[in-house]
Length: 63
Image (cartoon, rainbow, N blue to C red; front, side, top):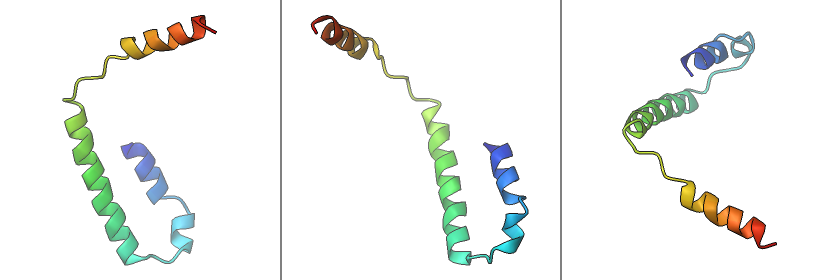
């Protein structure tokens, strides 16, 4: 993600478009919020999909 952001910030088109400070501030804050949220997701246990998979397979078999 860091590499993608770096690439997007350094493309030639960036120099041709006028900056919108309010939008840039919003995006910078949003990126920081998303990073913080992602940090908490690493600690979250992944959902068990087995029950849903079984239900799906049952539905397929009944058709």
